[in-house]
Amino acid sequence: MVWDNGGLPIVKREHYAIKKGIKLKTLIIAEAGVNHNGDLALARQLIDAAVDAGADMIKFQTFNADRLVTNQAPKADYQNQSSDAGESQHAMIRRLELTRDMHEALITHCESRGIQFFSTGFDLESIDMLLELGLDSFKIPSGEITNLPYLRHLGRCNKPVMLSTGMSTLGEIEAALDVLEQAGTPRSLITVLHCNTEYPTPIADVNLSAMITIRNAFGVAVGYSDHTSGIEVAIAAVALGATVIEKHFTLDRNLPGPDHKASLEPEELKAMVAAIRNIEQALGDGIKRPSASEAKNKPVARKSMVAACAIRAGEVFSEINLAVKRPGTGISPMRWDELMGRKAPRDFAADELIEL
Image 1 (spheres, one colour):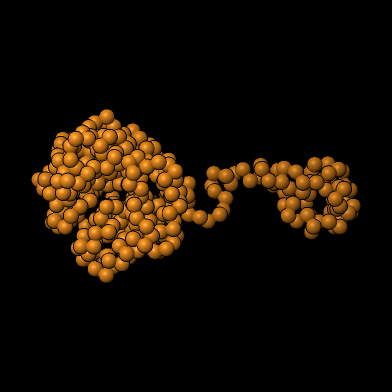
Image 2 (cartoon, one colour):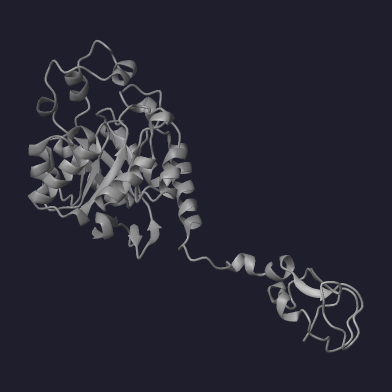
Protein backbone atom coordinates (compact mmCIF):
# COMPACT_ATOMS: atom_id res chain seq x y z
CA MET A 1 0.00 0.00 0.00
CA VAL A 2 1.39 3.41 -1.02
CA TRP A 3 0.54 6.62 0.77
CA ASP A 4 -0.51 9.87 -0.84
CA ASN A 5 -0.89 13.46 0.37
CA GLY A 6 -1.85 13.80 4.03
CA GLY A 7 -0.85 10.26 4.96
CA LEU A 8 -3.85 8.72 3.21
CA PRO A 9 -3.59 5.47 1.30
CA ILE A 10 -3.93 4.55 -2.30
CA VAL A 11 -5.85 1.30 -2.26
CA LYS A 12 -6.57 -0.59 -5.49
CA ARG A 13 -4.86 2.29 -7.36
CA GLU A 14 -7.57 4.71 -6.34
CA HIS A 15 -6.45 8.04 -4.90
CA TYR A 16 -7.56 9.42 -1.58
CA ALA A 17 -7.40 12.78 0.19
CA ILE A 18 -6.90 16.10 -1.55
CA LYS A 19 -4.69 16.73 -4.56
CA LYS A 20 -4.20 20.24 -5.94
CA GLY A 21 -7.23 21.39 -3.97
CA ILE A 22 -9.51 18.78 -5.51
CA LYS A 23 -11.08 16.14 -3.31
CA LEU A 24 -10.58 12.83 -5.05
CA LYS A 25 -11.85 10.01 -2.87
CA THR A 26 -12.74 9.55 0.77
CA LEU A 27 -11.12 6.66 2.59
CA ILE A 28 -14.01 4.72 4.13
CA ILE A 29 -13.10 2.51 7.07
CA ALA A 30 -15.65 -0.05 8.16
CA GLU A 31 -14.98 -0.36 11.90
CA ALA A 32 -15.60 -3.95 12.94
CA GLY A 33 -13.87 -3.19 16.24
CA VAL A 34 -14.84 -5.87 18.73
CA ASN A 35 -18.14 -6.73 17.06
CA HIS A 36 -16.70 -10.14 16.19
CA ASN A 37 -17.32 -11.10 19.85
CA GLY A 38 -14.06 -13.07 19.82
CA ASP A 39 -15.44 -15.41 17.14
CA LEU A 40 -13.17 -15.84 14.09
CA ALA A 41 -16.04 -17.00 11.87
CA LEU A 42 -18.06 -13.89 12.77
CA ALA A 43 -15.00 -11.72 12.07
CA ARG A 44 -14.73 -13.24 8.59
CA GLN A 45 -18.40 -12.51 7.99
CA LEU A 46 -17.78 -8.90 8.97
CA ILE A 47 -15.00 -8.70 6.38
CA ASP A 48 -17.37 -10.06 3.73
CA ALA A 49 -20.03 -7.52 4.70
CA ALA A 50 -17.53 -4.66 4.50
CA VAL A 51 -16.49 -5.78 1.03
CA ASP A 52 -20.12 -6.03 -0.09
CA ALA A 53 -20.78 -2.52 1.22
CA GLY A 54 -17.88 -1.08 -0.79
CA ALA A 55 -15.66 -0.01 2.13
CA ASP A 56 -11.96 0.54 1.47
CA MET A 57 -10.69 -0.83 4.78
CA ILE A 58 -11.98 -2.93 7.61
CA LYS A 59 -10.60 -2.15 11.05
CA PHE A 60 -10.36 -4.37 14.09
CA GLN A 61 -8.87 -3.71 17.53
CA THR A 62 -5.66 -5.28 18.81
CA PHE A 63 -5.14 -5.44 22.58
CA ASN A 64 -4.37 -7.58 25.58
CA ALA A 65 -6.76 -7.20 28.50
CA ASP A 66 -4.00 -7.46 31.11
CA ARG A 67 -2.05 -4.63 29.47
CA LEU A 68 -5.09 -2.49 28.77
CA VAL A 69 -7.11 -2.28 32.00
CA THR A 70 -6.86 -3.05 35.69
CA ASN A 71 -9.15 -5.62 37.28
CA GLN A 72 -10.95 -2.76 39.00
CA ALA A 73 -11.46 -0.52 35.94
CA PRO A 74 -15.17 0.39 35.57
CA LYS A 75 -17.11 0.11 32.34
CA ALA A 76 -18.64 3.06 30.53
CA ASP A 77 -22.38 3.58 30.89
CA TYR A 78 -23.04 2.43 27.33
CA GLN A 79 -21.02 -0.74 28.01
CA ASN A 80 -23.08 -1.51 31.09
CA GLN A 81 -26.27 -1.00 29.11
CA SER A 82 -25.20 -3.36 26.33
CA SER A 83 -23.46 -6.07 28.36
CA ASP A 84 -23.63 -7.75 31.74
CA ALA A 85 -23.46 -4.90 34.25
CA GLY A 86 -21.95 -7.24 36.81
CA GLU A 87 -19.04 -8.15 34.55
CA SER A 88 -15.86 -6.09 34.91
CA GLN A 89 -14.34 -4.21 32.01
CA HIS A 90 -11.33 -6.54 32.21
CA ALA A 91 -13.47 -9.65 31.92
CA MET A 92 -15.50 -8.15 29.06
CA ILE A 93 -12.39 -7.16 27.13
CA ARG A 94 -10.72 -10.51 27.75
CA ARG A 95 -13.49 -12.22 25.79
CA LEU A 96 -12.97 -9.85 22.85
CA GLU A 97 -9.23 -10.35 22.30
CA LEU A 98 -7.91 -11.47 18.93
CA THR A 99 -4.87 -13.75 19.06
CA ARG A 100 -1.94 -13.43 16.66
CA ASP A 101 -3.17 -16.49 14.78
CA MET A 102 -6.59 -14.89 14.44
CA HIS A 103 -4.97 -11.72 13.10
CA GLU A 104 -3.08 -13.73 10.50
CA ALA A 105 -6.25 -15.54 9.45
CA LEU A 106 -8.14 -12.26 9.10
CA ILE A 107 -5.34 -10.65 7.08
CA THR A 108 -5.38 -13.63 4.73
CA HIS A 109 -9.15 -13.39 4.35
CA CYS A 110 -8.93 -9.65 3.65
CA GLU A 111 -6.33 -10.29 0.96
CA SER A 112 -8.55 -12.91 -0.65
CA ARG A 113 -11.51 -10.47 -0.68
CA GLY A 114 -9.54 -7.44 -1.90
CA ILE A 115 -10.00 -5.21 1.14
CA GLN A 116 -7.30 -3.63 3.31
CA PHE A 117 -6.93 -5.07 6.81
CA PHE A 118 -6.46 -2.40 9.49
CA SER A 119 -6.38 -2.47 13.27
CA THR A 120 -5.97 -0.18 16.25
CA GLY A 121 -3.21 -1.25 18.61
CA PHE A 122 -4.01 -0.26 22.18
CA ASP A 123 -0.60 -0.89 23.75
CA LEU A 124 3.08 -0.96 22.77
CA GLU A 125 3.27 -4.73 22.33
CA SER A 126 0.16 -4.69 20.13
CA ILE A 127 1.69 -2.00 17.94
CA ASP A 128 4.84 -4.08 17.55
CA MET A 129 2.82 -7.16 16.65
CA LEU A 130 0.92 -5.23 13.99
CA LEU A 131 4.24 -4.05 12.56
CA GLU A 132 5.46 -7.64 12.45
CA LEU A 133 2.28 -8.61 10.64
CA GLY A 134 3.04 -6.09 7.92
CA LEU A 135 0.77 -3.16 8.74
CA ASP A 136 2.22 0.08 7.45
CA SER A 137 -0.27 2.53 8.93
CA PHE A 138 -1.70 3.02 12.40
CA LYS A 139 -4.72 4.37 14.22
CA ILE A 140 -4.42 6.05 17.61
CA PRO A 141 -7.68 5.64 19.53
CA SER A 142 -9.10 8.58 21.43
CA GLY A 143 -8.23 7.07 24.80
CA GLU A 144 -4.50 7.12 24.00
CA ILE A 145 -4.23 10.77 22.93
CA THR A 146 -2.77 11.64 26.36
CA ASN A 147 -0.57 8.51 26.61
CA LEU A 148 2.94 9.92 26.16
CA PRO A 149 4.87 6.59 26.05
CA TYR A 150 2.36 5.20 23.56
CA LEU A 151 2.51 8.29 21.32
CA ARG A 152 6.29 8.37 21.42
CA HIS A 153 6.57 4.67 20.58
CA LEU A 154 4.22 5.01 17.63
CA GLY A 155 5.87 8.23 16.49
CA ARG A 156 9.23 6.44 16.25
CA CYS A 157 7.74 4.08 13.67
CA ASN A 158 7.55 6.95 11.16
CA LYS A 159 4.41 5.46 9.63
CA PRO A 160 1.18 7.14 8.50
CA VAL A 161 -1.06 7.75 11.50
CA MET A 162 -4.71 8.51 12.07
CA LEU A 163 -5.28 10.27 15.38
CA SER A 164 -8.76 10.12 16.92
CA THR A 165 -9.62 13.06 19.16
CA GLY A 166 -12.67 12.07 21.20
CA MET A 167 -12.84 13.71 24.64
CA SER A 168 -9.91 15.98 23.77
CA THR A 169 -9.28 19.70 23.68
CA LEU A 170 -7.43 21.56 20.95
CA GLY A 171 -4.48 21.85 23.31
CA GLU A 172 -4.36 18.08 23.85
CA ILE A 173 -4.42 17.51 20.10
CA GLU A 174 -1.54 19.94 19.70
CA ALA A 175 0.45 18.18 22.44
CA ALA A 176 -0.11 14.77 20.81
CA LEU A 177 0.96 16.09 17.41
CA ASP A 178 4.10 17.57 18.95
CA VAL A 179 5.02 14.22 20.55
CA LEU A 180 4.49 12.33 17.30
CA GLU A 181 6.56 14.82 15.33
CA GLN A 182 9.37 14.98 17.85
CA ALA A 183 9.51 11.18 17.87
CA GLY A 184 9.93 11.05 14.09
CA THR A 185 6.53 11.11 12.36
CA PRO A 186 6.11 14.27 10.25
CA ARG A 187 2.79 16.08 10.26
CA SER A 188 2.38 15.26 6.57
CA LEU A 189 1.81 11.62 7.60
CA ILE A 190 -0.82 12.43 10.22
CA THR A 191 -4.56 12.61 9.69
CA VAL A 192 -6.56 13.93 12.63
CA LEU A 193 -10.05 12.48 13.08
CA HIS A 194 -12.69 14.54 14.81
CA CYS A 195 -14.59 12.24 17.14
CA ASN A 196 -17.01 12.04 20.05
CA THR A 197 -16.70 8.96 22.25
CA GLU A 198 -20.26 8.67 23.49
CA TYR A 199 -21.97 5.62 21.94
CA PRO A 200 -24.20 6.59 20.26
CA THR A 201 -23.25 10.25 20.06
CA PRO A 202 -26.18 12.67 20.50
CA ILE A 203 -26.54 14.81 17.39
CA ALA A 204 -26.29 17.97 19.46
CA ASP A 205 -22.85 16.85 20.69
CA VAL A 206 -21.30 16.10 17.30
CA ASN A 207 -19.85 19.61 16.79
CA LEU A 208 -18.79 18.77 13.25
CA SER A 209 -17.45 22.27 12.71
CA ALA A 210 -14.62 21.36 15.09
CA MET A 211 -13.18 19.23 12.29
CA ILE A 212 -12.65 22.42 10.30
CA THR A 213 -11.15 24.11 13.36
CA ILE A 214 -8.63 21.26 13.67
CA ARG A 215 -7.67 21.49 10.01
CA ASN A 216 -7.18 25.24 10.17
CA ALA A 217 -5.32 25.15 13.49
CA PHE A 218 -2.76 22.50 12.60
CA GLY A 219 -2.61 22.33 8.83
CA VAL A 220 -3.36 18.61 8.79
CA ALA A 221 -5.61 16.36 6.76
CA VAL A 222 -8.78 15.71 8.75
CA GLY A 223 -11.46 13.06 8.91
CA TYR A 224 -14.31 11.97 11.09
CA SER A 225 -14.78 8.91 13.29
CA ASP A 226 -18.55 8.70 13.58
CA HIS A 227 -20.44 7.25 16.53
CA THR A 228 -23.88 8.68 15.78
CA SER A 229 -26.77 6.33 15.11
CA GLY A 230 -27.41 7.20 11.48
CA ILE A 231 -25.38 7.94 8.39
CA GLU A 232 -26.17 11.59 7.71
CA VAL A 233 -23.41 13.10 9.88
CA ALA A 234 -20.72 11.04 8.18
CA ILE A 235 -22.04 12.19 4.82
CA ALA A 236 -22.04 15.81 5.99
CA ALA A 237 -18.44 15.40 7.16
CA VAL A 238 -17.41 14.42 3.64
CA ALA A 239 -19.12 17.50 2.26
CA LEU A 240 -17.11 19.58 4.74
CA GLY A 241 -13.81 18.08 3.62
CA ALA A 242 -13.27 14.88 5.63
CA THR A 243 -10.66 12.73 3.88
CA VAL A 244 -11.40 9.71 6.08
CA ILE A 245 -14.66 8.35 7.45
CA GLU A 246 -14.64 5.63 10.08
CA LYS A 247 -17.91 4.01 11.11
CA HIS A 248 -18.74 1.09 13.40
CA PHE A 249 -20.78 -1.70 11.86
CA THR A 250 -22.16 -5.06 12.91
CA LEU A 251 -23.99 -7.94 11.32
CA ASP A 252 -26.85 -7.50 13.79
CA ARG A 253 -27.42 -4.78 16.38
CA ASN A 254 -29.13 -7.33 18.63
CA LEU A 255 -25.99 -9.39 19.11
CA PRO A 256 -24.48 -9.34 22.61
CA GLY A 257 -21.50 -7.06 23.10
CA PRO A 258 -20.62 -3.46 24.00
CA ASP A 259 -20.62 -1.82 20.55
CA HIS A 260 -23.31 -3.55 18.51
CA LYS A 261 -26.18 -1.23 19.43
CA ALA A 262 -24.25 1.86 18.29
CA SER A 263 -23.23 0.28 14.97
CA LEU A 264 -24.64 0.23 11.47
CA GLU A 265 -26.00 -2.97 10.01
CA PRO A 266 -24.68 -4.09 6.58
CA GLU A 267 -27.37 -2.47 4.44
CA GLU A 268 -26.94 0.81 6.31
CA LEU A 269 -23.18 0.67 5.80
CA LYS A 270 -23.76 0.07 2.10
CA ALA A 271 -26.11 3.06 1.96
CA MET A 272 -23.53 5.26 3.69
CA VAL A 273 -20.78 4.26 1.26
CA ALA A 274 -23.04 4.90 -1.73
CA ALA A 275 -24.09 8.30 -0.39
CA ILE A 276 -20.48 9.32 0.24
CA ARG A 277 -19.48 8.34 -3.28
CA ASN A 278 -22.37 10.45 -4.60
CA ILE A 279 -21.29 13.40 -2.49
CA GLU A 280 -17.74 13.10 -3.81
CA GLN A 281 -19.05 13.37 -7.36
CA ALA A 282 -21.29 16.27 -6.39
CA LEU A 283 -18.38 18.20 -4.85
CA GLY A 284 -16.60 18.25 -8.20
CA ASP A 285 -13.42 20.21 -8.89
CA GLY A 286 -14.59 23.64 -7.76
CA ILE A 287 -14.33 25.25 -11.20
CA LYS A 288 -17.55 27.12 -12.02
CA ARG A 289 -18.52 26.38 -15.59
CA PRO A 290 -21.51 24.89 -17.43
CA SER A 291 -21.63 21.13 -17.06
CA ALA A 292 -22.03 18.89 -20.08
CA SER A 293 -25.52 17.92 -18.94
CA GLU A 294 -26.80 21.49 -18.63
CA ALA A 295 -25.10 23.04 -21.67
CA LYS A 296 -27.95 21.97 -23.94
CA ASN A 297 -30.39 24.00 -21.82
CA LYS A 298 -28.58 27.30 -22.25
CA PRO A 299 -30.33 28.38 -25.48
CA VAL A 300 -33.68 27.27 -24.03
CA ALA A 301 -33.46 28.98 -20.64
CA ARG A 302 -31.53 32.14 -21.52
CA LYS A 303 -32.90 35.10 -23.44
CA SER A 304 -32.06 37.21 -26.45
CA MET A 305 -32.90 40.70 -27.67
CA VAL A 306 -36.04 40.67 -29.82
CA ALA A 307 -38.31 43.17 -31.48
CA ALA A 308 -41.06 44.26 -29.09
CA CYS A 309 -43.10 45.33 -32.12
CA ALA A 310 -42.59 45.67 -35.85
CA ILE A 311 -39.42 47.66 -36.53
CA ARG A 312 -38.63 49.25 -39.89
CA ALA A 313 -35.15 49.46 -41.39
CA GLY A 314 -33.39 52.62 -40.21
CA GLU A 315 -35.60 52.97 -37.12
CA VAL A 316 -33.62 53.68 -33.92
CA PHE A 317 -33.53 50.90 -31.36
CA SER A 318 -35.03 51.99 -28.03
CA GLU A 319 -36.58 50.68 -24.85
CA ILE A 320 -39.94 50.94 -26.60
CA ASN A 321 -39.25 48.73 -29.59
CA LEU A 322 -36.83 46.21 -28.01
CA ALA A 323 -37.61 43.42 -25.53
CA VAL A 324 -35.81 40.47 -23.92
CA LYS A 325 -37.30 37.00 -24.44
CA ARG A 326 -36.39 33.38 -24.87
CA PRO A 327 -34.71 31.64 -26.69
CA GLY A 328 -31.11 32.55 -26.01
CA THR A 329 -29.88 31.98 -29.55
CA GLY A 330 -29.62 35.64 -30.53
CA ILE A 331 -27.84 38.73 -29.24
CA SER A 332 -27.30 38.61 -25.48
CA PRO A 333 -29.28 41.09 -23.37
CA MET A 334 -25.95 41.98 -21.79
CA ARG A 335 -25.43 44.07 -24.98
CA TRP A 336 -28.61 46.08 -24.32
CA ASP A 337 -26.79 49.40 -23.84
CA GLU A 338 -24.75 48.80 -26.99
CA LEU A 339 -27.92 48.58 -29.13
CA MET A 340 -29.69 51.61 -27.66
CA GLY A 341 -29.65 54.43 -30.23
CA ARG A 342 -28.42 52.28 -33.11
CA LYS A 343 -30.42 52.01 -36.32
CA ALA A 344 -32.11 48.81 -37.39
CA PRO A 345 -30.22 47.31 -40.36
CA ARG A 346 -33.45 45.86 -41.79
CA ASP A 347 -37.12 45.33 -41.03
CA PHE A 348 -37.93 43.14 -38.01
CA ALA A 349 -41.27 41.53 -37.24
CA ALA A 350 -42.57 41.48 -33.65
CA ASP A 351 -40.78 38.79 -31.57
CA GLU A 352 -38.09 38.36 -34.22
CA LEU A 353 -34.51 37.98 -32.94
CA ILE A 354 -32.53 41.17 -33.48
CA GLU A 355 -29.53 40.96 -35.84
CA LEU A 356 -26.88 43.55 -36.52
